[in-house]
Length: 293
Image (cartoon, rainbow, N blue to C red; front, side, top):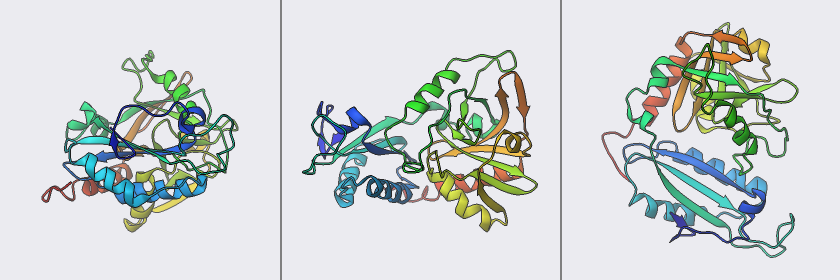
């Protein structure tokens, strides 16, 4: 682990990321020595820091990332955390800018993703509609900020859960706002297909603007598909012909079953989900013949 370019395992007890969640992060998949979506991650990281007025030396960060990758396995998860740095007690940032904290970590690639194709991609996933709702705030909507308590609490609802209709539990949970908008998965973005049109929540009030979500918003129209950002509710979701989830680590997961309290909704893996899987896999493996750091 690198902290501001130095090998270390501890941060200041006064760090504002620890006290207030005053920071942002990125979770980047490394595949066979490459980071296929790195430029998208860095662009989002830069934009997020600008929105929060957190100074970021992107050149320095990239140098530190190169140093980390030189000793990392070719298949791994790289986490980048940026905080405003250390400050005194109180919410207001220090008048004199503290040194921004840059934390870089390497994590093992989950075993499920070492199988090609992964079970979830090939056979689909089972999800649960979470009771815990997402907080709404247009000022922070779209950001991958460090305030993840909604996701932590929602994760408790699917961890180790077993239902009579789903003995194997759930792979993911879907989250809504308190007023009924379906927004995203706990760790993924949502797409639904209705009457040939691809719909995805607009993230104006809540949610994370995911890397693969943005990638698919660009690429699916080039495949002749109409893609619309909207504010779907449960009626739109349950009437869908296809449902799939995505993030930059696992790629695209078709949803085959959703448990909503005592009701079970089911879907087949459809052509749009398969196309999204193909687009992700093609980008992931584009550099396989020229492996580099």
